[in-house]
Image 1 (cartoon, each protein chain N blue to C red):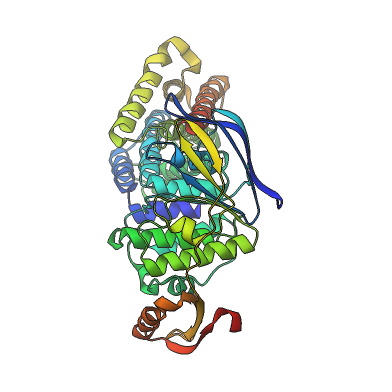
Image 2 (cartoon, rainbow over the protein chains, first blue to last red):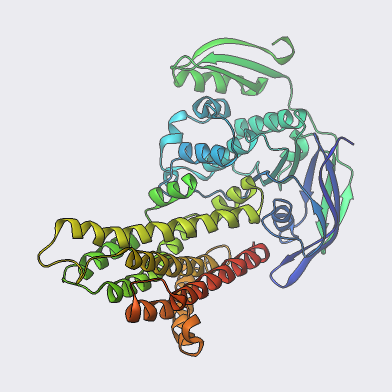
Length: 259
Length: 225
């Protein structure tokens, strides 16, 4: 296993006065992803919150990086806050250099204008994609994502899967929950943690079904900034249509391996 | 602090508290001349209430999922607690500057009748700074104690803050000179003009209660998530 990013030993998780999980053991190295599965109320979100440092474990030991990227299941920002402002503020909190969020948003499939609208006017899927955008650009070595694929359209799921693969290649560890089949299908999982009855059982991960050949689309946005997106062959027509509608100039489309 | 200012600016949640503070200032100094000690005893107590209101509104203006993402980015509850302590210190300092700066600025432009019965000396100013800072810090700390994620319902938080401030009033009698904001106000009312042991004891009791409230908030926050 690569250098351990997250180590939990005999951790117990409490919600209110009730212990909902006990004897959780988890060691996660850089580049590995873990899928938390279990029925509603089994403690997936509570465990993620403990791993994110939002709650202390009721028992056991936890060694985690100081800063991580956490995206809750339901993302809510202050109603009048512009997502662009929030992204810049989070960047400042993390003491990271500035990012061209317009370009990053376009790559994720969001119109850059969305960043300047009050968050109250955005859909749940848009807010979730903005929070995921912040998480994957945070440079964090640990990403904790609660139902990240829920609420995203097909292109959004492809984008997220690509970003998670990139983060894993860069040495980040990922813990995610997902009730759909997307996590298993799109993400290379080191293991699956099955939560049920207050216990946590480690299962082998199934090999992901690959989403088909990927294409690289290179384009220039109306401001002349370069855009590069990896998309599945089945989605390329929709992506090109969106880019052209946004006034972008398409440079090239070619398979990933040739790019 | 830029992040907190962004929330304050965008949520506009602290506006009612700011408006109330300005009305209070204008109302107090509309009638002249004033006695320095008595007036600043009153405004120090007002600072405790306004700090609680401002900080409570500001912290309530940050939705919980947004606060959670911030805590994770900062590196855990401990770092967020430090941000809250900075907020308490900044609000206490800001209110002190406003509540002492306004009458001092008025004295420069209004002379007949004068703002105060006698000129403001360095001793008066030192007493005022200590009294306003310590009272506002305690009010702010009480607001942090009952802010999310510890108390999630705004109505419950307001009731809890009011109850805590009333407890401060109720216990000030038995505690005497170490009775928190009420003791500060009594010392200011009786013998303002120089920083003495009584004022230091009263301010120290406020700051001790502030530290206790912030420590309790940190402990409670780690458990309530």
